[in-house]
Image (cartoon, rainbow, N blue to C red; front, side, top):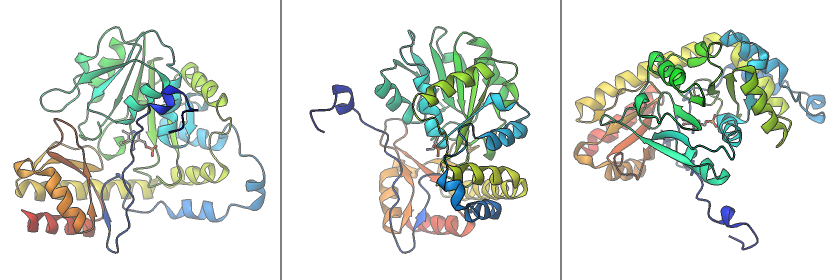
Length: 351
Ligand code: PMP
C-alpha cells in the first residue's frame, strides 16, 4: 500500500468476507444467506420506488423504519438505531468506545470482524477463550472491562446462550456496555431485546441479512436505552448523517410488514437444519448444537480442509476456518432442501 497512508492504515488486515464464486450449478453455503428470497412485498416496494424519492435525500431519521422496528419489539423509536447492515451498526458501536481507558472483551472464537475494528480504531481487545465444548462462558468475562461484545448464537459455532445467562452477564457488568450481536437469533434463540427496558448498559444488534433474506440491501439495527442510542446517532452523524438510502428504508419497512413470510422462511430453515444435522451425524460428523442458520460440524478424521476442497470441486461452497481449535470443522449454511441433498450426496460420496 502507498507510503502516503498512515502506519495504522498500512498495517490493517481486514476481515475477508465469504467468496461469491461463479459455477454453473453453484450451491453456495458459505455466507449464511437465506436460501429463500425476500417477501414479495419487499420486491414490490423496491419496484415502486419513484424518481422523486431518488432525486431527494432520504429521511435522515429513517422514521418509518425505526417506528416499525420499535413496534416489533415493544420499544420506542428513540430506542432504535439503524445502519447499513449490522456491520456498520457494530462499527459505529466500536467507535463509541474509542479511547476508552479499559479494553473491550469478546469471545475467542467469535465474529472475526471484532478484532479488525479494534485494530482499526486502536481499541484494546481482551479475548475471552471459549470453554472445552466451544461454548461462551459468561463467567469468564473480566469484571473491569470497558465493554463486552458477543454474538448470540455465537458465530461460527452456532451455540446459543439462554436469556438467563445473557442477563447474568449484563447485570454483572452494569458499569460497561454489553453488546449482544443477534445476527442469527431468529433461528432458535430468545432475543435480549426483552431486557432493553431494564438495563441501560444493554445494546442488542440485529440484521435483516439472514432471517429476512436481505443481505444485499444492507440493513441492520440496534436496540437500547435512549441514551445509548443517542451516542450511536452522534457517531453516525459525524460520519454520514443519512443512515440508509431511500430504497433500503422502504424495502426494510415492507420486510417487517410481512410477518407470515418471515415466519415461514425461518421455520423452513430450522426444519432443514435439523434434518441435515441428523444425516451428517449418521455419516460420522460431530455437530455442535446449532441455533443458527448454519451447522458447525467436525469432519470425520479431522479432514475438514480435504472435504472443503472436494466439495468445492463439485460446486458446493462451505466455509473452512484456518484457525487452531476449529480447523477440523466446516461451517455449512442451510440452503434449500434440494441444495442440502446435493451436499449430503457429495459428502456421502467423499466419505
Ligand atoms: N454479526 C455476525 C455474528 C455475523 O455473522 C454477521 C454476518 N457476516 C454480521 C454481524 C453482519 O451482518 P450484516 O452486516 O449483513 O448485517
